[in-house]
Length: 211
Image (cartoon, rainbow, N blue to C red; front, side, top):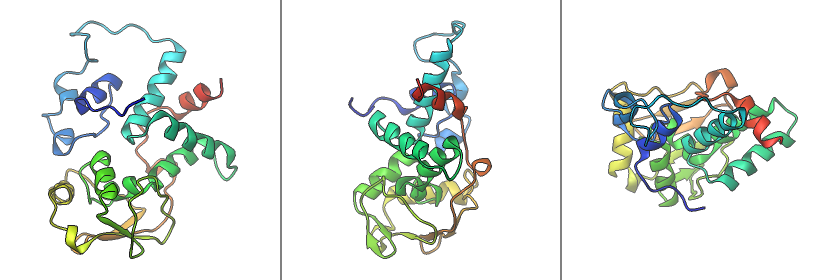
């Protein structure tokens, strides 16, 4: 299945939660989700009651879209979390998603959203421990240092990400330590489930994939 290339905020309206797929617009009253809080195509009609399967599917779609993953990528991540026995499957799933390089770049404030963070990574603008890494799914470990290449620090996408942090639209999470002046940050630790922004009921996804 091809990656979605349509209007990004339509995805937030489809899932009825803010997936923060845009930049500043996602954090302001200009957000399409706030202006039109109904799914695309419904034109204000009352939504039908969803079946249990539909609820589970919507949870999976929302989380998958929030992190910008294709179905195979998302399922592989879920299966990796399921096979591990170090924590609950839902928490491990979220930790693996947050350890992705594109997600870390976003959380450090170097991009306005994860979609742009993925582009910044694939275009070779990011260093991990001093070496260029252009794989968005690269898993960051505790103690890894992530930074924007010196020659890339003035690109507009990076400036847009910094602006959201500097103007108070976004907060940098506690599990990363960031030097915004030098565009460098350290992944201090893997976050706990209660620290992460989990927009859906993770048990819905576990039950869906368990069928």
